[in-house]
Structure formats: C-alpha cells, structure tokens
Image (cartoon, rainbow, N blue to C red; front, side, top):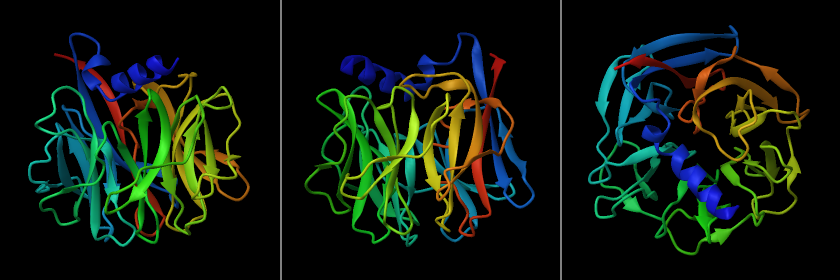
Length: 305
C-alpha cells in the first residue's frame, strides 16, 4: 500500500498524466465573496494555472503556471512573473508567511532529473530563494504564526506524513505516524492547532492536532473526500475542497468537486459553491484575503487541441 501511495501522489502532481488525450485545459480564476455568497470570474485563459494565494497586503493574487509564479490583479490583470532566481519548477504548494514578508515555494531543481519538490523561501517581493529542506519530495503547506516553523507533507520510507522544520532549515520533525496518507497541514492563526486531511478513518477527512502532533481530533465526518482546510485569518472558519465521489487517498485533477465552509467551533459544514470541474490545483494552498471576507480558487474545463 505504501508504494501505491507514492505513485498516487506522483500522478496527482503530474498534470500531464491526468489530461485526456487530445484535450487541453482552460483555467478560470474566481473570487468568492462570503457576504454576497457568490463567485466572480476575473480571469479565464486557455492554459493551465493553479493554486492562488492572496497577497498579504490584499492587492493581488499569486498563481503558479509552467513552473513560474505570476502576480494577477484582483481585476484579472497581468502584473508579471515574480523573480525567483533559478527556482523555475514551482508546483502548487506555495504561500506567504503570516507577517507577509516571506514567500515559501515548493519546487523541483534544475540539477535533479525527474520529479522533485524541495521547499525554498524568498522575500515576498522576489529575489534569490534559499533552500530549506534537504530531502525531496517535500510539499509546503503552512508556517507557524510565530514565524519559527514551516509544516509540510513528505514521503519518507514510502509513507506520506506531516513534518515540521525550522524556517531556517535543520532537523526534520515528524508529527504523524499513520500508515495512511496525512496531507495538507496548515497552522491556525492563533497557533493552537495544525489542521490537515487524513485517510486514517478509511475516508479522507479534515483533522486537527496540537502543534507537537498530539491530541488528533476529527473535524469532518461525511461520505465525501475532504481535503485542504484553509483557515481564515479571523480563525473562525476554514474553506475545504470536497470531491463528490470517494477518491480514496488521491486528490486528482479533473473531478466533480465543490467548496465548503467549515465552522471551527461547531464543525458545521456549509456549501459555498455548486458542483464544478476541478480538484488538484483548485485550492491547494491558503487563498483568503486579509479581511476573511473573500478567497480565490480555480475552476477547469477541457477543450479539443
């Protein structure tokens, strides 16, 4: 089972393995407004892009496409490619520090053949990234609110678990030990919990644990595959992506999904969107605006070549 987990993760991060022959991807970038309870399309293009982050100052979005990170205005305008030096194989696991000064990037390296993913940090304004994790693959998902640690998903001995490490590098600290997949770790803004998704119950659900990995607590309980809890800055709710059909331990591209809102106190779930074609790349990383009133996400379509 461990080997199959490794393969599933590789396929989930390899888009070409999931696009039907003779088709290409159309990507649409949306902003969802919690007060108006509606989505607004700001950019639709005949190419593949993924995983919007909302900038810490609230003025633009950051997406990845073809290994590069691009800034997109809130009106859909192109603001250019962020300078990330030699780091040019960015995947969809990237995001900002709580103080807004640092950007974390998961990316392959030019001198490593095949699929790889290391974690780097760089100034939020761009520059020359510094590598943090020595081992690959490592997929960034969050930083602690005190700015001391990153938290990430990684397969070691062919088993995916959650790890943390100093933002300056150093010892890799394992936080979960389940045989099943644990993924998508993200610190709550108050620093009390790490939220993550896990297959330990036999269905992919949202969980949380203390920052040292203790006291795991299940947060969702339904018959859907639930991934990637992104906690709003107000620390009251989180967005999650839900696959309508059970995907076991995979989160593939090109499935019917919807976005839901999880109340972190009551564990109540509310639908935010209707069903749409999405999955991998839709909302892998934190995408809330600073005011906790809006978030960004991506929908996909396929068209003939």
